[in-house]
Image (cartoon, rainbow, N blue to C red; front, top):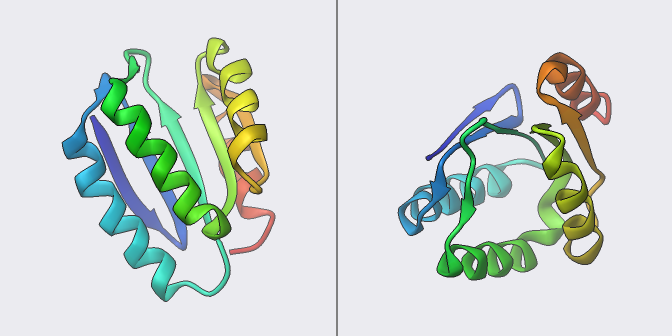
Length: 121
C-alpha cells in the first residue's frame, strides 16, 4: 500500500504492507507531475506503517531505476517509522541520493514535518 498526497508543496507518502508494481504505477506519474511544475526539488515525508514489509524483487528494481532517474529532483526526505529502518535507510541514501535524508521515530511525526519544511518549500 502506498498513498501519496501533496500538502503545501510537500509530498506526504504513507507506505504499508509490501509494495507492488501497481503502487509504483500510481506513484511515479504523480511525483513526475509535482516535480515538473515545482521549481527546485521536491521534499518528502515518508511514513512507514508498522506493517511495512518492503518490496518484492521487481519492486526493488523499479525503486532503484526511479531513484536514479529522479535523483536531482529530491529535496529533503524525512523517513518516519520503526527504528529498524534507520540503518537501512541511511545506508541506502548514501549510495543513491544527493538529498538530505533523516530518520525519525514513529512518535516524531511533527518534528519530521518541521525538519523537511525548514529547508524552504
